[in-house]
Each structure stands twice: as C-alpha cells, then as structure tokens.
Image (cartoon, rainbow, N blue to C red; front, side, top):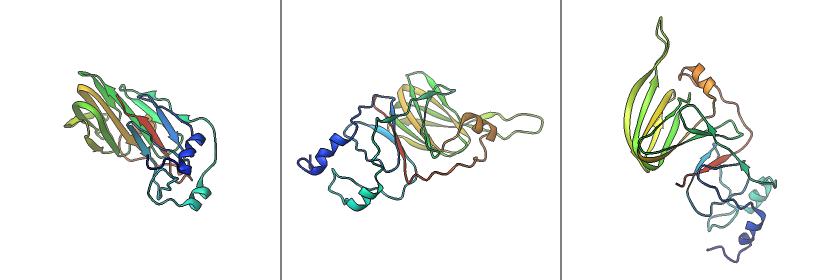
Amino acid sequence: RNCLGTVWERSRYLLNYLVLEPGEALFLNANEPHAYLFGDCIECMAESDNVVRAGLTPKFKDVDVLCEMLTYDDGPPYMVPPLLIDGGAERYIAPVPEFLVDRAMVEAGGAVLLPASPFVSIVVVVEGRGKLEELVRQQPQLGGGANSVDGLVHAVRQGSVFMACAGTALQVRAEERLLIFRATAKHDLAEAEAAGGGGAPSLPTTTAASASASASASA
C-alpha cells in the first residue's frame, strides 16, 4: 500500500502472477525478481551474500546493481512437481545442487517416515501436533549388517523447529493433522543408503549467487 502510485507499482505487469495451491512448489533462479503478496510458504535458499531490492519497500534500493544483475529472462514460472518417496513423504528436487525439500502431510493417527539424509537437516512443523522420533543408523558390526535403532522422541506442534543430524531418519506420527517440512543438502536415496548414513558425499558447485524454492504451506 505504501508504494501505490510509484513506478514500482507498474512492475506487476512485467511479472508472472501465480497462485500456489497447497503442495505446489516454484523454483526461482539467481538474479530473478520475485515478491510474495500474501499467504504462507516455505522457502529454501542456497547460500547468498546479498539481497538486492527492486522496490515495493522503504528500504535501500541499489538501482545500478539491480540493473546489472537481472537476467531479463522471460517465460512461464518454473514449477517443481513433488515426487513420492519411500516412507510416504513428498520430495521437491530443484535444478540446483545445493538443496532439496521434503513435505509430509500426516492425518491424525497416521505416520510418515522421512528417510535419512547424509547431511544435516532442518525440520519445521507448520501445522498440527504429534511425535517426532529419531531413527539412527548404526555402523555395520562384524558378521552382521547395519540396522536402525530408536533414538529420541520429541513432542512437536505448530512452530516447532529441529535440527536432525546426518544419517538420522525421522518417524513422524500425528496426533492431529500434521504438516511438516524438511530441508537438507541435495542427494539421492541410493547415495544416502550407500553412505550408510555416515560421511557426507561431496557436492558439486554452482556459479549461481543464490537460488530459492518455495512450497505452499497452507492447509
């Protein structure tokens, strides 16, 4: 509202207008302008050393840097469809090497398993209430294979945030409908299984300064 009548108000005619439904995700590459209008979403962003504002804000706007860095690419939004993974969760795989996002919507009385990642994970509970159990993969013993053992059990509710260690699977049980997101570094399930939940495989690098993906977190 503070920017009505300014030149930035007219920028909306140059941008894609998109309404994300619950469970949909959108990828934004580095140096692409974007703005949230309303609603809730989860945004996962690669490492970045700057934020350049284009307008619609009273904060400082560096016009010269902005004009130099923009890609000026046009086209439809880059949608990221969810993939159903073992355990019942959905996975969003962006076309960059830095990150991926898992989403689990669990009905009351139900359970979903978030498979172990060979990297540290950040877990955010957006809606509901339930239990989060850590399942830690043991290293193979002489004469036997590796197996998972029960770990800590956490009571979770809307607004809970956790860090899960590398190699830790998460069993999510809902006492009421539960919506939970997990962000971790990009990998595939076969790679994580081969690593035994232990040492993290190396990641490729990217020349992008930053990248972000968001998924609607509304009910």
